[in-house]
Length: 164
Image (cartoon, rainbow, N blue to C red):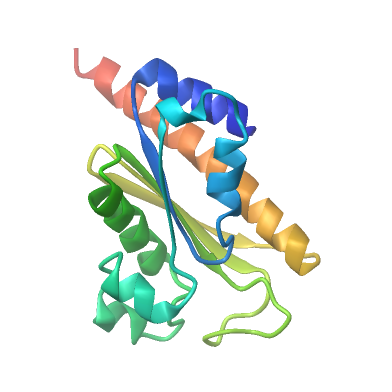
């Protein structure tokens, strides 16, 4: 999925997006803002690379961060996505967290990543098991996050049309 397609879809739906990034360190928001016209839909990003920022800025629960997996788990990604919507006032929140290497982190192997999308009060999380270099893992995570945005917006539209 391309960032251009995501920006166009968000624009057509009159939605805004914000990213909460750890593993990707701003690459996801960078991909979105590379698209001409992105300023109409992109609110901004919080790069919470340090674990304590996930809690203090995005509102990830200390109890969640204390669990096995630490900052690298599905619930952290979900709370990051919801938190960035609140902090930046967006209708869609996208989060990334994981391990790009070179060493395992929080008991998770290199290549473990989670992407999450929050929209319309629902959060969807995908776990990724990626191979490759640090750069390849980060890029694959960006692509997975963009794909999840499209899937969630399609699901939201389907739920809306089935209720009529």
